[in-house]
Image (cartoon, rainbow, N blue to C red):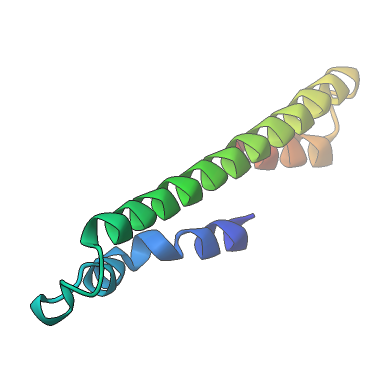
Amino acid sequence: IQELLRVMRTIDDRIVHELNTTIPTASFVGKVDPGQTCKELYESLMDAHTKRERIIKNCISQTSAVVKTLKEEREKAPEDALLLKQLRKEQTKV
């Protein structure tokens, strides 16, 4: 998931470059509609943010379910050190 999020952040990380290539210079202002290109950039950013948010929420949901299961197992076997370690790892992930 971390690699996927890193890839999805590319547009945010390169926003200055994206703006520089989206907004036309004085010599190209008549050939390109700056309003349309800015709108497309905005929509691209919003789409990336929405997808990233959905992935993050899905990850939290799945990890929370694992934590819940591990807590239930822990109640049945409170002496299991390996189980406790795994539970702590998943809790940290959330």
